[in-house]
Length: 164
Image 1 (cartoon, helix red, strand yellow):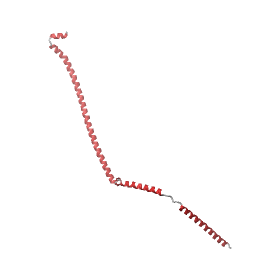
Image 2 (image 1 turned 135 degrees about the vertical axis):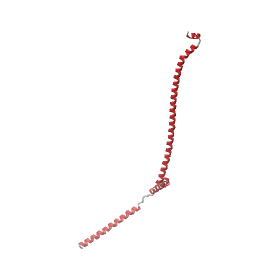
Image 3 (image 1 turned 90 degrees about the vertical axis):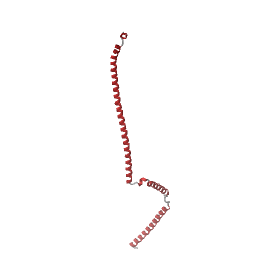
Image 4 (image 1 turned 30 degrees about the vertical axis):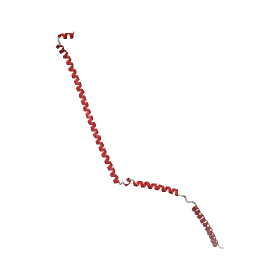
C-alpha cells in the first residue's frame, strides 16, 4: 500500500468515526429534547386567572369612567360652565357688597344721630348749668332785697321783736 492509499483509508476511518460520534450526539440531543418534552410544562392557570380578574376589574373601572359626564365635556362646554359659575359668583358678591354698603350707611346714620344726641345732651347740660347759675344769682339777689322789703313792710312792733 502506498501512502496515498494509507492516507485515504485513514480519512475513511476518520469519517466513519466522526459519523458514529455525530450519530451518538444526535441521539443524545434527541434524548434531552424528549426528556424536556416529558417534563411537565409550568401551570400558568393561576397566574392567567389573576390576570383575567385584573383585566375585568380594569374594564369595569374604565366603563365607570366612560359613563361619567365629565368625560363627555368639551373645552367649550367647560368654558361655558366656568363663565356661568363666575357670573353667579359675581352676582352674589355684588349682592353682598350692596348689603354691606347698606349696613354701613345705616351704621353711619346711627352714629350721626348719636353724635347729634350727644351734642344735644351737651347743649342741654350747658343750659341746665346756665339756668342753675342764673337761678342762684337771682336767688342771691332776691335774698339780698326781699328780707329788707319784708322787714320794712312789717309793723315796727314786730321788727323790734325780731331784732331783739
